[in-house]
Picture 1 (cartoon, rainbow, N blue to C red):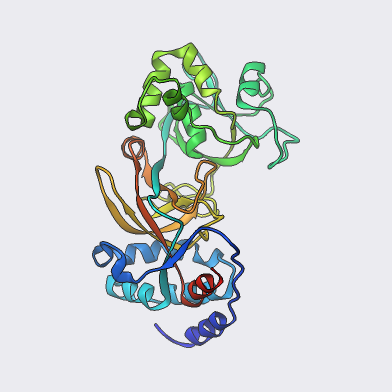
Picture 2: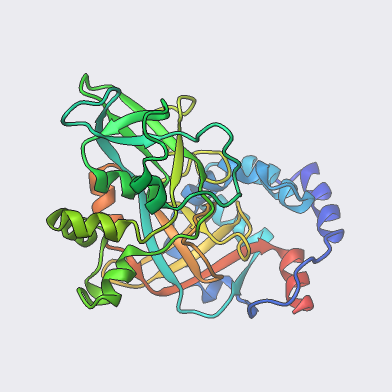
Amino acid sequence: MIHAALASLLLALAAVTNSAGAGPERHMLSFSDLHGWESDDHLAALQAFTETCDLIGDPDWQGLCALAKDQPKTAAAARTYFELFFRPVQIGTPPALFTGYYEPELRGAMQRDSHYAWPIYRRPPGFVPGRLWHSRAEIEQQGLLRGRGLEIAWLEDPVEVFFLQIQGSGRVRLPDGSTIRVGFDGKNGHPYKSVGGELVRRGLFKAHQLSAQTIKSWVRANPADGQRLLQQNPSFVFFRRIDEVPSDKGPLGAMGRSVTSGRSLAVDDDFTRMGAPVWIEKTGAVPLRRLMVAQDAGSAIKGAQRADIFYGTGAEAGETAGKIRDGGRMVVLLPIQRALAMLDAG
């Protein structure tokens, strides 16, 4: 509903100053330029947006968030809301690169045995986030975390431990049927290096042949070489138990709130405002045209036209996410005056 919050919003919009400097090309579009816009479920997008919009600190965004939460719960009202208060801005030059991620559910135990022998680690005492620490190879080859009581749980497969670190969160199904949830709690400061790219560099696969499933299969079929391959990625992730999130909610994203299957994106927040709506037009075997929300980040997500789509929890979501490596474009929705200020500055 349009009420006193609108007056406050307009005052805030008038006061917006632009802080963007030189950067990638930016082009304002119209909603009619967004292919498939009229067919999307805008109410689902609005609901995802309101999960985190209160965390965007700027006054213009706060006014829009208040209005979003006050909208009638209909698709028509949601679409009108986005079209009335936002403008689409393409930042950077397509093609985009879209990949997928998910929350794995893995089998594990709270105590080590002959079957569950591969640990998930919490941060060691004295570890300082953001400071360069030992590489993955050093940690594993020298046993730097072993025997220090840092194990959260034990998994049955070292390959899944590695991919859990890439995903950043997951659920562990224990032998009694219960589950625990783990989430990102820091990394060792080394840059992420794609092991898939290393397989291509070695001539073992072509780029189009790669998926998470392909890499897992190769590592399992070549245990010794596979372990050395995984250690080519120097980045190492620490976890913590996540007990505060209900089981029906998604894992915590970079904004500290649960992400939504099929509506949340991991982005490079150097270019895309965390919490902003983002229209995507993904090509590939299963095209996707949908309004998403930038609610997560990742060390491998770099660039203005780069995003990781959250596909949900479990094996089926993992099968889908692991096959995604598609082009297209992404367009950020910005408050009207903010969009105009950005373009004027450019």
